[in-house]
Amino acid sequence: MGIGSVAAREFRRVVGWRLPLGWFTVSLVVMVVLWRLLVAQKEKPPEVALFGGLMLTELGLVLVVVPALVVRFRLGEAGDADLPGFAVAAGRLLAGYGYCLVLLSTALPLVVVCLLSGEVTVARAALAMVVVATIAGVVCAVAQCFSAVCRSPRRAGVWTYVSASVLTVGTAVVFFGTALATFHWVTVSGDSRPCPEPAEPGCRMSHDVTFCADSTDRIWWVMAPNPVVVLSDAARSPAVSGRYPTDPLGSVSRWIRSARYPLTEDDFRPKLPDSPGRDMSWYPGPPIWPAGLAFDLLLAGLAFGITVRRTAFGRQEPRP
Image 1 (cartoon, one colour):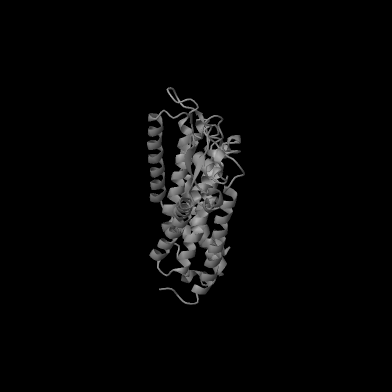
Image 2 (cartoon, rainbow, N blue to C red):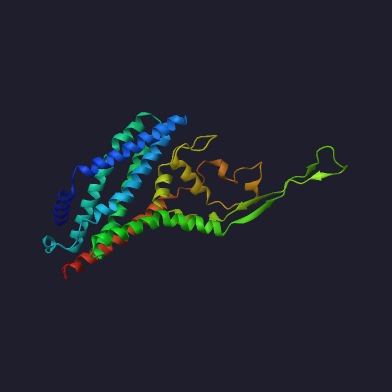
């Protein structure tokens, strides 16, 4: 009962109509701009790429807005003195996460528009929204943890943004930096052919080609917890025979799955544009997003545990 009372009190304190309206407005503007761009480029069907862009927009809003929202739920108030630390932390986390779900629900009409086209399945849309909502819960837990540890809400917000940046930009910097540092040159020996006329008798021309290869098969796991990778691999578009996916989610999913395969000389031969095994499926190998999402949930659980301990300890010394 303590968890519910804390959650209801905190939810009533921060709920309002301006933020949900702003969230919906940003999503709508991005969707209209993407639609105009896709129509101008004669992309068919445009709804597939439009849905991918919409989901990435929702994820971006979660990473930008949620940290500033959750740090407003301060811990250690006088009204919570008689409640266990777990009840206070869980109640405030539930209130913050509930408000995040309200914000995400404003995008449901736009998702329905993509569903009406018939190019996006209900299962794919539902999975995408569930993944975005789960990542929002992870961000809420991390933001509440810093709110409990830091005495200043501004400092807590900064550290939350730093954590979100490490998961998104930081993992990408490590991945591409390591790939760049481990690149090497590969020379492929092609079949020699007779020199074009006029030429001396017995003259033959070599077709050796040199390419630049990297070692992404050793470092692909760095990108697994990245929220963009998790969302893209979970909500990827169905594989279409004969062409690449037409949405950004499918492109990211194929890229990160293909990065797990070691490169060989056959990858660079003109007669084999794809590495062995990749041409069997547009999304080679098992999915990556379950492991990445599990890591993010583990991070959220650790952050919540710290919040519970800090909540009980913080009430012994009132915060200014």
